[in-house]
Length: 221
Ligand code: CA
Image (cartoon, rainbow, N blue to C red; front, side, top):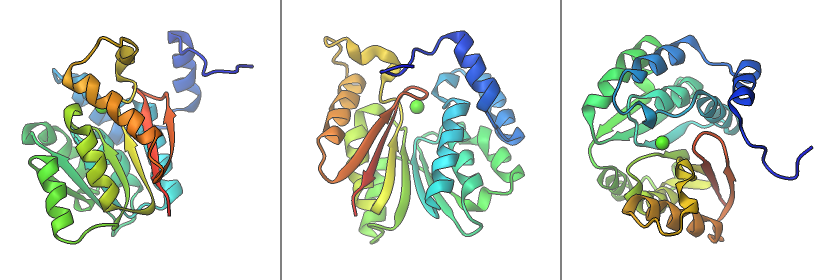
């Protein structure tokens, strides 16, 4: 029994994964391939990938956006759950990261569903709005550079349909946000966005302590 979220000890985490993780082999292999990368901590956790697949399936997502693709684990997670004609617009600034994931997307047979856009996501999303794609997406996952988090949220709010979902990664920022003196651009941006979403009457929201904290905001119909 617990009146608050229970602390996740190492032993409990092992039990949690052992008793509930279903990770397709192709995802496990991509995760392993990414572990050798110097910035491997940017990869989402396997249970978070599973939860995102669950959400995409639950919502019947057809069109999705991702900001910050890195080596492509979360993109592959989402793409595996999209229908044949589904589309994920995956925004990543550094092409070399995505080179690790692309062979896995291909092997999984979902490469066609992933529309990879190399460049600055603020510009990519801005161009999509210019092109009249407002309200045409069911789901967005924001996991790009943290200092642009508020801009990414505002852009996604335009691109997502009423009833669609925006998921924002690193909302708990490795626990660092409890230090109120911390005011570097990334920490400040995450803190600002968490409060903005809490107070945003346009959305229903919930912050999940999964992975590094996953903020969920559903645009109200
Ligand atoms: Ca992240």
